[in-house]
Image (cartoon, rainbow, N blue to C red):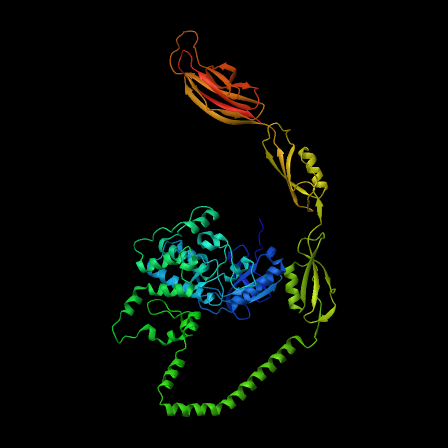
Length: 616
């Protein structure tokens, strides 16, 4: 199994110091770290080396990170930076002080009121992403972080988008986690914001009950249950209004669910008993509908509606709600018409001056920007081409970025390890313009070789031929009645195919014959066994027999006998007397076929047991 190197103690780009491993997934490993420049704690995810070898994959991941960095919401783990270090591509994110919802659920379900609050905050964060066209596609407790100060944050957006392998559009389809995937994900259909609503409903269900609605079976079986089965009923202590929200979020048809996270959050807010009582407040009480923040319309829905006093507030969201501007508009509307016209004349008089100031500011901004570009890159500035040979693709990208050149990759067979740079154009030390392209050849490994035909050969001969061809082999022994022991019965890849030099050819080899137990049976006096099938050339019956009482004759006992029958031919071909004792054996050379051994009782009562063994 491939393992990524442990980078604890490293400092990526001499800035991000990696302190401890926080977790590991399919695409990367997450470290707690420290930003030396800004002196703040951070979380750093470093992509695993075998993913970093694909430059197109890395570029797509960078685009996803840039997109997600623009989603500025207090309920979403923020991405601070993205870089290419020699250790591999990485991104730097906010470090959340707390625990994941998955860790919290290990201690049992949450109270209904707390579950509703956590789910509402989760839904608001998802709604903020949905408003920008981003679908998470892997909402689960492990990706929901509970901060120590009561905030709820959603993480791992970038990897979910990257895992889907899409970059052109905004929405994305990924496999998801089987216990939390939506029916449309199980079908392989396109995903929408309603996909996240379903997964958030599963998470809320688990918070209320302690486990998801469907837990047993393979990934395929879980997918079918999401497609076909209704979730078990929620416990009686769950308020009906909250249970109704859960059931709608878990509708099989996306059109029957809440449209997005914002709609789910609104429904969860309405399921709060304190919200119901506030709506029923007497006349004169302030109604939420008259709150200035509610006048923000769609813009407020994007960043998330502030929490009311019934739940912990998110200060970062509440601070965004503009309250002064609507007040000025209301005051302006209350002015007499004459004063409004006078005010309009004053504003029109000031308009040309304001426009000149705005145009001057814009021109100054453009000039400063152009000056900054010239200072950073220089007009026609020259740079020295670095030596990129011997580096993996991620190291090439990192070194090229630092020296202001752009690598373009191609692959060619060579004796170097796969993914290592073996040649470049221009050569190291050449002077080129900043931003120039450097063509880098990555090793595709040794060229493929023809696979020899070894079926029918003795395994020792086959192994020699494969070794001479530069191939390895893996042998699996199988029972093969009628075949020569150690003969090669099959191979993969097959003959006439080609395979990379040094790759492994799987061989199926006939193992030497041995005795194998087919069946056992026992009885007292008369009895018979079930039919059994012989595959090898000979078989045997091992038995034990003892008398259960006193024999009729003083000198000898008249015990049971056994008879072998060929069931396909309907004939009897051999028999033997059972003698008192254990571990006695009678062998047959009858060859393959369907047989039965029948026991006939003697004059004296006896107890016996038999084991039938086949030799192949």
